[in-house]
Amino acid sequence: TAKHPWNLMTTSADEGQFLSMLIKLINAKNTMEIGVFTGYSLLATAMALPDDGKILAMDINRENYEIGLPVIEKAGLAHKIEFKEGPALPVLDQMIENGKYHGSYDFIFVDADKDNYLNYHKRLIDLVKIGGLIGYDNTLWNGSVVAPPDAPLRKYVRY
Image (tube, rainbow, N blue to C red; front, side, top):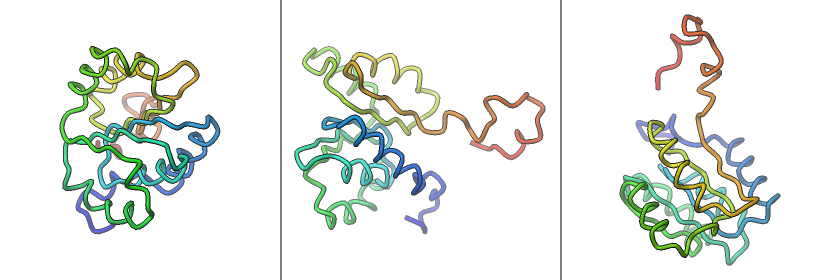
């Protein structure tokens, strides 16, 4: 994925290890990922799960997911992943309406369109189990959330 024009969006190795540690600490088995891109965080999650663990992975672009899929397959982890292409909000709404997914996810990782983080959160609270975790990528924006609006740092943050 290093040659992909949007490679800066790829989850870093240390973040992948952090996700893996969280998943193992809570003994997660049923997980969800919103925003897959080329699948590095998905790979880290799949590696951390037990063999019968599951990941519902959603992204608006299957082509990007398929860039990393050969690595996931080579690692023998593809059986853990159910990929859905398209916007996540309608899928989440259907899951909530269905009722059988209430409190069924141990771990959820969101690395998607930042403008919808609050909309995702409102829905995910219903789907994560008590004691489960929801992680959001890029919430600190390189410190810009705590920097004053006129801070020099702001001119370098271009998301």
